[in-house]
Length: 123
Length: 143
Image (cartoon, rainbow over all chains, first blue to last red; front, side, top):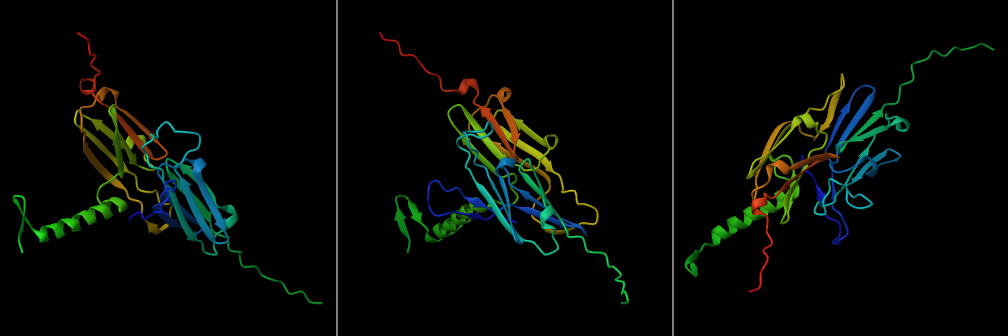
């Protein structure tokens, strides 16, 4: 799959926004989402959940000057991608981990209530 | 139909074909050429040449960087994502497998002083110019 590059309106300070590549895997109980965002440290990742819409964002811009591995010639970029989660995701228990430019999200599914027998009491 | 420009014959069809190739190259530059991994940025000044390779999720033992006097080669292996038991892929965009890419260097480099640093998924390789090709300041003596 190719990256999509969106150039924002022609302003010098705007940095290009790129769609990160993702792998999505699903088991019976969990959905795993792995996104590639090279150049992004864990401090510069933003995971936003609004209802069922999950947006992951990352930025290579680092505040406070130049990082040791960056040089002034390395172009900054931002990553963004949005996903609509199904109703089976337990939104309160999503966890995330960021390492070496790879963001891993673990999205557990809502546990189905086991079928219960309802007793009918008489008077 | 044929027009001479200087000593060359002007071929309108060749120009059209070249325009098509330039356009392809332009698009590929934006999107990323297939089969050329990892995506690389290169820049240089009068003292050194630097490469930045986008290599998220790599292990250092799976990367090999070799610098000879006129060539930089980067080789490695991207591990396949460990799929949890019973998991199904809903989407698979990330790649895996072996890769190898070489770059011709525009000047001789000092192989002993090459530095490679991997951080946040980007491998940066800095190759200083060999001292015998560094610009040398020449003092001008009067008289």
